[in-house]
Amino acid sequence: MTREKELNALHEIIHSCRLCPLHETRTNAVPGEGPINAQLFFIGEAPGAQEDDTGKPFVGRSGKLLISMIEEIGLSREDVFISSILNCRPPKNRTPKLSEIELCRPYVEKQIELINPRIIVLLGRVAIYSIVGPWKVTESHGRFFEAKGRTYFMTFHPAAALRSSSVKDLMRADFRILQSELL
Ligand code: URA
Image 1 (tube, rainbow, N blue to C red):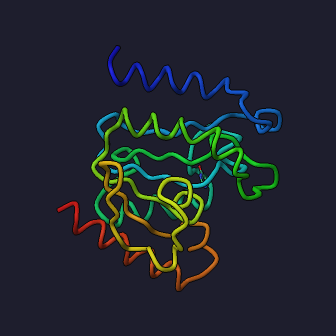
Image 2: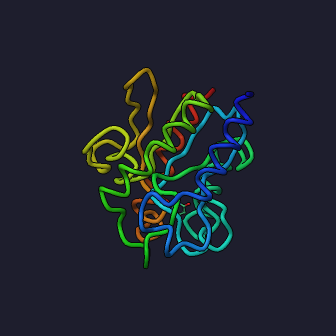
């Protein structure tokens, strides 16, 4: 099977996943999307209302900000892979539970294996915690981190940047660091 077919098969599994109770409240599972050869792989937290409605990741307000930052560094949505730790929306956008993270993380790990990106960008506390451990985003943002044969880059979640213009400035500066690594 080609990597693309394997990715499609994985996404079929995610669409019918019933591993945790979030399948009872979701409208659509949101498996993430992007090209099979993406060099950058972004990981957020969990789908929100608009993602749940459409089945597409990062299409709401946070998504618009994320995509504008991706465009500011000379890339487009079509160039990168965008995913989240959870594939289903938690009710009222509450923080993901540890049990949900444990059950859902293998999906994003499989996506990473299939895409084999150059850099994995962890957006915010939940992505950082779930993938590399309990680092504080305020202390670890703007930094690369090597682990398990992969390169991670840590920055804020765009929802935090929407709440604070100083976080937005820090996130923009992080994206410039990311851009200089890609040159
Ligand atoms: N926030 C996320 O972390 N993921 C999405 O898909 C949308 C908003």
